[in-house]
Amino acid sequence: MKIITCDQYSDEYWAAKLGIPTSSNFDKLVTTKGKTSIQRKKYMFKLAGEVILGHCVEGYQSQSMANGLETEAEAREFYEFTSGTKIEQVGFCISDDSKCGSSPDGLVETDGCLEIKCPEIHTHVGYMLNPDSLKTSYFQQAQGQMLVTDRKWVDLISYFSGMKPVMVRIERDKEFIDALKKEIDVFYEELQTTIKQLEEK
Image (cartoon, rainbow, N blue to C red; front, side, top):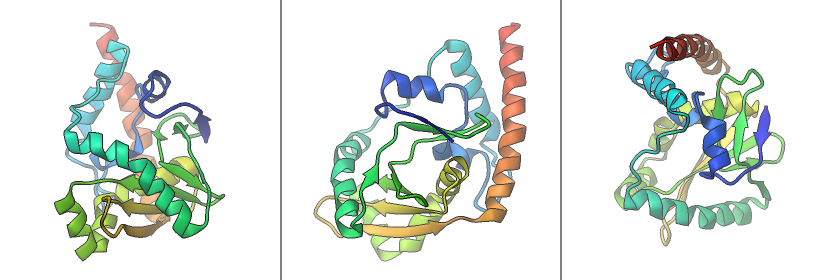
């Protein structure tokens, strides 16, 4: 993989993401069963439109999302303390073939990634009661991170300040990643065709 050293959500970060599918949106490409998602075309049109526009279109940032960004550093410190591991923060990672990317919240030693979620309190309570639902909610993103970074696992944390964190580990699923890679290859080629069509309009 290629690592872009920058602050997440900086101008350089958005420029690196322009026109390529990213792991946080892989649920728009495939379902947890590896089947094509019904959101696929809408996501393709969004990426193609951003290329024509020349920059990423940021979505609406709710108050809970803003709070989540502020809490992320606290969650990372919790992980480093409990795991005894120093986290390498990265800006944006791009696959070797440049067809997809990912922005993990940290790289853990040589084999792992860290992904932090700071949801609203009702969502966090739900994860506390059913940790497997945390895995299901972000399965495609975690597998996508492993595809891009070629790592073996992702530690996924749901963190709400003042409450007990929820942490689950998602292991590499070779069968799913193979299916995801095929979908990304097809998606990327169709995306380039769509961009070319728009440029000719």
